[in-house]
Amino acid sequence: MTQPSLPSSRRDPINRKRTLAEAIARYVPVGAPSECWLCIAGFRNKHNWHRGFKVNGFHWVAHRAAYTYFIGPIPDGLDVLHRCDIPACCNPAHLFLGTQSDNAKDMWIKERGNPGSPLGQKLGPAWNRQISVEQAHQIFNRYLEGETQRSIANDLGVTDVAISFILRGKHHSELGRTREVEHLLGRARRRT
Image 1: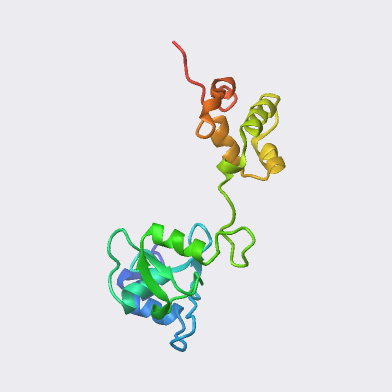
Image 2: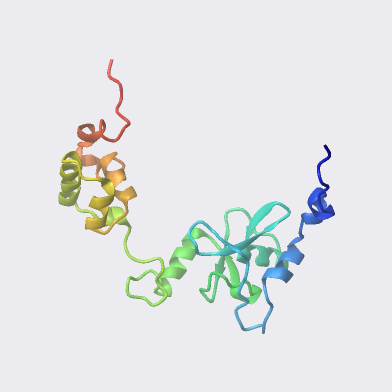
């Protein structure tokens, strides 16, 4: 029995590959030089922050692809930052290079890091600085009483990962209570 033949575009992987120029033309509608050129690509990065697309089998974040295409290669150790603070923007006039430190400084200067700021999708202090030593003791006690990490996290307004980090001793390790709960975490060390 013979298998049905595939369309030529499916048989030949070269036909499916797209150049950077083709991807930019397809996913980035070019507007006026002062406007934001918003990427309309299908996927977002893991933080649901930047848009991107696939070029020759590699995933590109759209603003990095636009910078590479319109301006040139991105040196190692540098990020592409936005003057307009619009993550989907690909207008090369709105993009510039900087370090992660430059990006953080830019965020605070523009007040995107303040909890009350209108653009503040990345808000507030880190969860590990929100939990006090007293709360960390409560977390251990509640977990030992049988409460789930998720319910503790919901009560405290943090993630269950934050609770896990405390129970495993990655944060607030000065409490020295991880041995009390390690058998409950499923990672108890065997003692010989």
